[in-house]
Amino acid sequence: MINHDSDVPVYVQLADILRDMIASRQVRPHERLPSISYLVQTYGVADQTVKKAMQVLRDEGLVQTVTGKGVYVIERP
Image (cartoon, rainbow, N blue to C red; front, side, top):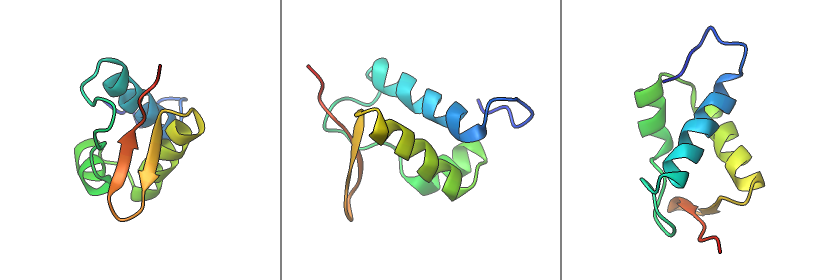
C-alpha cells in the first residue's frame, strides 16, 4: 500500500511495489505491467506519479516501454 504521509516519496513507494511484483514473478519477463490508469485507480496516485515510478524501473533496467503497447518486464540473466 501507498502511505501518503510517509517521508518516502510516493513514486518511490510505487516503484518498490512494482519491483516486488517483478521479483516475486507476479509479472514475468515479457509480460506487461499494469496500465497507468489501473495503477492510478488501485493506488490512488496521479498519473505523473506512475510515470515517474516506471521511469525509475526503466533506469534500473527492469522494464522497457513499447510504444502504443505498454511497459514490459525485461528478461534478465
